[in-house]
Image (cartoon, rainbow, N blue to C red; front, side, top):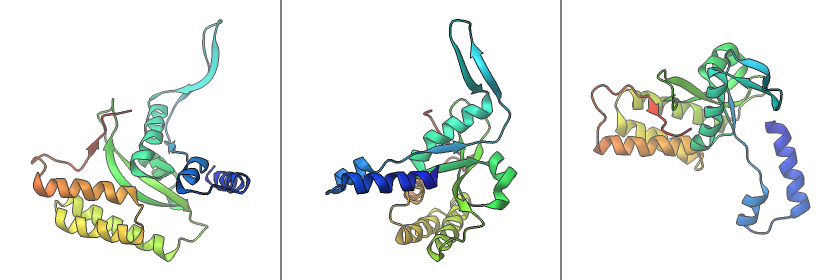
Length: 192
């Protein structure tokens, strides 16, 4: 889907030829995808009056929540730790965060899907992953000032990295308002 959208947007740009940044933003379609590996019930569900093919279950709900979360973290594809465990060795990923979605008690690690391991990463992407991982280690160790510096290094490499900006803001908040003693590093989402 990611590759098809690049081509789709390229063709739209050629056809519409936006002149301003605002027009460019309107023409360039962005998507968010949440992928979770789990059990689900799939099939025709409903009544004789209204039947619909769908999938239901906790695993489907988490995938849906991750799709919505992709906007928060500024990425097009987020995968759950279940999907990471199932096929992470074939993918380039970066652990974004550990979150607890609305309606769930169990936190889950989430990852940005960068691509397939068969396609090499750029040197810039490798550096972003290295600095981001280091920043997350500082973050979980309550070393928020060091985390701020490391997230700032990510932003120097990619000034549009929404995940790094989000974490940098959290760290700055925690420097002034330290988390409670029982803080586990999990970010609890209050919206679907």
